[in-house]
Image 1 (tube, helix red, strand yellow):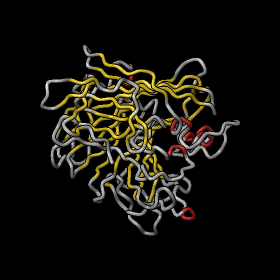
Image 2 (tube, rainbow, N blue to C red):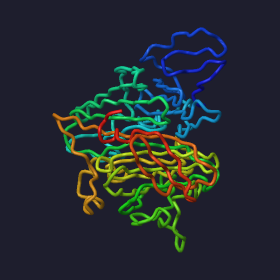
Image 3 (cartoon, one colour):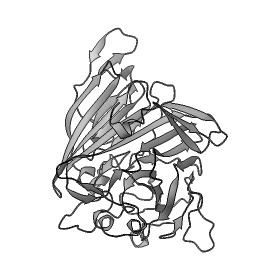
Image 4 (cartoon, rainbow, N blue to C red):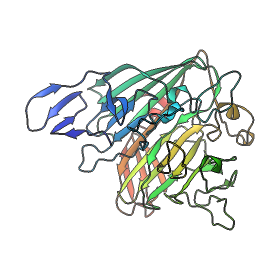
Length: 414
């Protein structure tokens, strides 16, 4: 189930009111900070006419998100784990709300303690309860915001999460500020998209990369009824040529997904650390494009989690079909201790941790959005940036302009 935004003639609008279709009366909506259970998780809402989002109290996972909400065909790009509403016993906190995008620190499995610290997978904040701080709108600027906080115990600190929507933009702007939490740690966003069923209809692209690698160890362990198709620790320079583990098998084209039903794989690409870095996924059967923008000096790499029914233990049960496009500074999904130690990426000059300060907050800003594209647009070939605008260029040269304040990544200002 997904969040229903229009039922029985009721529509959410950005001013925090309910508009009754066909009636003149405007009825006050729920006050800011009110929780609503959505796909089994108490969640807060934030909305404009273009975008309606929910974010879970537990873990701060952002989904469902409805882009192009004021059109005849809204788009909900994010994955929501299929075990929601099943009340399964889950001993990994992040799996309880698992959906959409969430901020992780320390990013990764965290199976090995670090200097006496023991963190759960993707950090406490990925499964702990967040607190509502404030919500509001600046009508003059057309900016709407929601602010949450979560304290950490394994390493004392506080994360302040701010989400922003701008009238007229099909974009979510976010800023996660880490206070305290002193020391090194991998971190990043875990954006997870719903994968279509038909093979190859998702076209994947990134800004220029220095190189990529498949997971150097075993990502999916057959002893746990999990299966991977990528070779381990294979280096590549093109997402269209990723080595598989099978003898004499041609390289995998990771720009065309889904593929290889029955496998769960992980790879990482290292972004060129200049300008604005981006990832993009085009639904060629639906003619829309999801994108994410980041500062590659802050989030240095992108981890791809390609899950296509390759895990058969509970709660996965061979039914999970999603694509994580996770912008991080990390060593794959290994977690804190391996990312902080010398490793296969850091030895090549690629940072795999950020150094958090006890006295100065570190803010990670991120942008995600959706736009329509014409039929035949295909894979994004290039993105051009101008003030307040990004232009996505497709395979046949089609150009799609998107209003987006990408300057926010550097300035924090909207």
